[in-house]
Length: 153
Image (tube, rainbow, N blue to C red; front, side, top):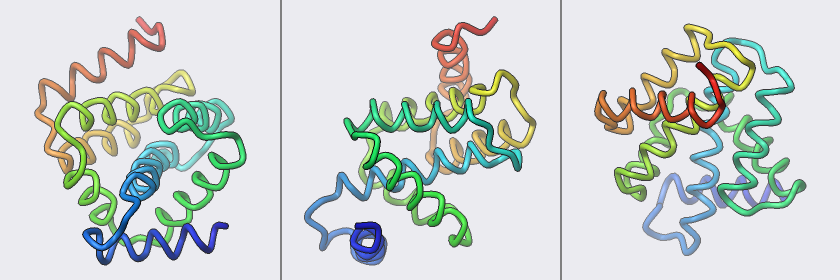
């Protein structure tokens, strides 16, 4: 199944207008950006991996096996990609502004999942928010909402 998803993702990135199932591509692009946050500090701990899995399950209504495959594919895409353009472009093309803000909030939640914010994680969230054209005040508000959701002070 991973090969099928991989082939589909490759087609979608090169010809997004030709694809019938844009939602799968958005799932992959979103998962790839979230994986970028998890690996930003060079270490992936269990709390971050669990937070990522739960986040993707809730967001896309996927079962454990599908989330596992999605995360594996997203991590592979992130490792093989030169930059974030392919993922960001798909999200910019298909997400409205409010969905982009919600994505940035999820990025913050992942950055804080292990109980600390590494400067590399913060820089990655900031960079991706800029690429998604999220205004600075919404970037900060998303960070504050993530704190509230996680119960941080």
